[in-house]
Image (tube, rainbow, N blue to C red; front, side, top):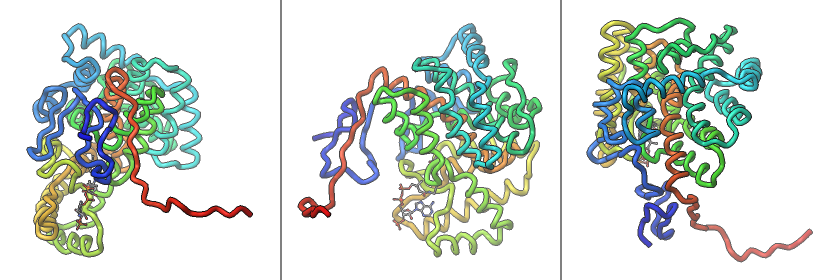
Length: 383
Ligand code: ACO
């Protein structure tokens, strides 16, 4: 049987590749990922055109409504999002308890999101808006609790991106810091059927609720093969420390069977276009602030890593992925590495919720099959 885009993942199970490479599980209008050309189109717009210029709220409206908002629509939509930033009491209680136990930030996020079930019921649209609006408050509040600081009250007078930085640092960010963060969350807001988006769509395809779907998606995101890579990517640059050490450290890592974090991708066979968008944003940002030497070192490390990967894995076409420059940009903004993956979630929650709504509108229960490779005729003897 051939791939069928509308059939909830239907393929001939004898030829299905492990890891579902190339399998079409649903149709989407949200984003196009062209791995051969290195192209990402978000709801019709090239990522390099829209991410550095648009407000996050514009992208949110686009993905949730299928078109850009008019100015009055955008004003109304931005206010609706801003009105949903506050945390319910139950969320604060869970975050407080998590902080007392020093739970990692990304795990605290996984724990906190289900507390929103009490306030949102089963309204898919309302839950989606609530999640997009509130994730920055959860991450910022928890980070402050972890450092024994009081969370700051949610504010409705800041843009979404500025509000996230405000929640984390407790002060209003300068415009260039807001722009850098906004370019980042725009760049990662959606990306086809990556593992976390697929997880969200599988959960919602049972007509469960959006909050459960996003809880599952965050769980999928945090793994180091997906959204957990930027922290280790930065660690590698810091470990290398000087450009003349890059070659020996990288060769030693590969010889020890390690993967270089921030390189390689399941779909892209050329450079991840998001890496270019974030590299340009980092280049601009590091002109005025941040550790310029670290930025230069990272660029040197990237060149060596690409050369050594091409030499050692010649058939694999490994290139820089989004996580390498994520690490650099977020580090420049002063975010600690434990906030890198949670910040990814702050951006990607837009795509997750948009996919949930699309799946509910157009999709079918996603129910693939497994290829059984165990014994079939073992004899069970009781007792
Ligand atoms: N460093 C070294 N070798 C690598 C890397 C890497 N970063 N990525 C892949 N390879 C090698 C594998 O070791 C394997 O080599 P082999 O054929 O000699 O055994 C070959 O390339 C194929 O690897 P697969 O695991 O089949 O590739 P897959 O498509 O499953 O991997 C992945 C994609 C998981 C992203 C991988 O490239 C990786 O682990 N990268 C590092 C982690 C990372 O940066 N993750 C973030 C991805 S972007 C995102 O999710 C937002």
